[in-house]
Length: 406
Ligand code: NDP
Image 1: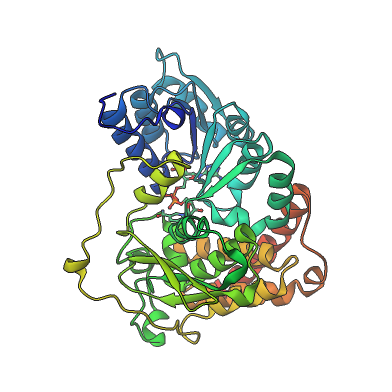
Image 2: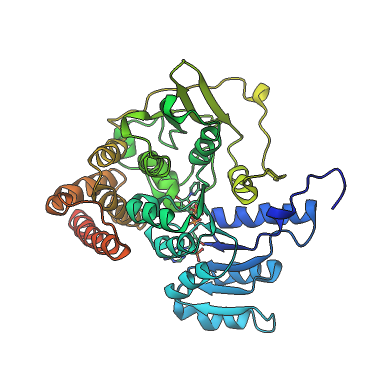
């Protein structure tokens, strides 16, 4: 380590497990670690485990470069392919959903939770329960299981560092303290690819158009969520749970440049903003090095080049998913779990061209209406309770999608 560099040995020595390493956040995490090794030395962030669902080729390539102790593929039928690809490397190979959870239970000091959807819930909880530092990108697991996660965090004293850019920004801003003087926390939204589209045009939007995000390169599911603004709705619920903020103190502004990620307004009229170029490697580097700061390969912000920052209110008519999520945030209890499950199914059917773009909001709304009886209960307080409700909502939403496609 050269003398001019800060002594980051306490964080650089952390063993890291990346859940969902083959995805957009997973690959960016490994990119940040590759950069840290170039700058601080080859032994920065030793990798304990990497996991994927089906992408054997990418997982094997990552494993050969980063030499984890173990690699797991969730689709058990792909175990022979992964074993063959990693033969002779000494890397332990495991397969199946349970193996992914087992990877999260292994003693890495830091776990990057970057699986997409509620499938990431059990592994993320396993990491929280053993008291790891959990860098959490997987917002669906917070929305689906807020109460379960809150209780697990209380029991284990795990540190949860949000990776979602807006929540990572809020986390950094809230470190200034004076939380009782906060009047409002505003999350920004880019507006997505259909920001200026008329509703009639949105009705015919294709999966390719919905996943062409103007500012961010992301996985398909979160890209569609950005196009419907459901992403911002899920993020409001995520912020409510992570920062214990009441719904009336949470707000959204559309900010197409994606430079300001979060604003915190205080009782004295002050507003603190967090800015960074739209590059997920910045919040990932923050989470990996927390509570210190380290070098990251992310794009730097050039405000003179950007010149103008604009803000506007979201359009609730063209983006009904945001209103549905806000209603679930207000309702609390089981509503966010149902919302999340219905949305996952609706997005899956849209990506498979079985329902149209506006059908996503319709599916979510009908599922929330259809499960009115379940909506009367409290928020599920156990993992089994969350999974049962999630399953019921998925079945209902699937029925809605099949009826719409017929
Ligand atoms: P991707 O779709 O790019 O990657 C998802 C990862 O999860 C892949 O490694 C995938 O494996 C794995 N995976 C998918 N399903 C399963 C399963 N059933 N069991 C185990 N592993 C699974 O998603 P992103 O990286 O875009 O997003 C990950 C999470 O981060 C999401 O919750 C998203 O909302 C959140 N997020 C993402 C941002 C971004 O910029 N991408 C920004 C902020 C938050 P395989 O490759 O084999 O399919």
